[in-house]
Image 1 (spheres, helix red, strand yellow):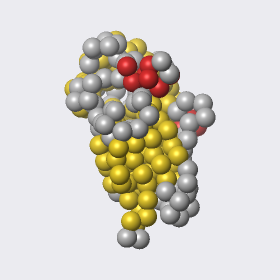
Image 2 (cartoon, helix red, strand yellow):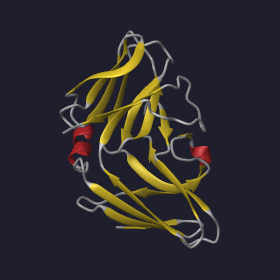
Image 3 (cartoon, helix red, strand yellow):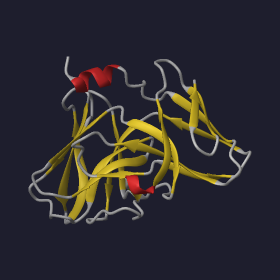
Length: 211
């Protein structure tokens, strides 16, 4: 079994409801971010998935229904701090529509032709008709972008079903292209199989995540 197939085997079922309660036990306001971590050699830029400002002593609950998506945006040059807003979101269903094509359709970049793709992989195929840097395409979770890359004719982007999500503090907000320079603290979110609730507590220095 390939690494992609192994990752697919542990992916949550589409439609699973998740709840994360975040508690700020520090004495300062915390700009809290939930973001994916790119693996070595990953294609494109990372997008902050969720964010919120949490006062000292306060708590915030994040709820989401797990789904996988392909996303398309208008930015051709991607850099830290830029605001990313998808212009098109297409649901990706494992083993049914986990491959899609970015093409020029009637003069406009479009995600089209969803179809079954390689097992355990979300694959974006960029058609030769795509003008370089005329926009971007990538993937997301629950309607929000996670990884995006500029349009490059004839290229392919491959992502797994289960990106490593982290919670942390830093300078970026939801929807911004991020870099590690804007992360002050972080901890992985690793929901065990069948577990859909967690609590992440911040003491001003470190995170404690319980499931």
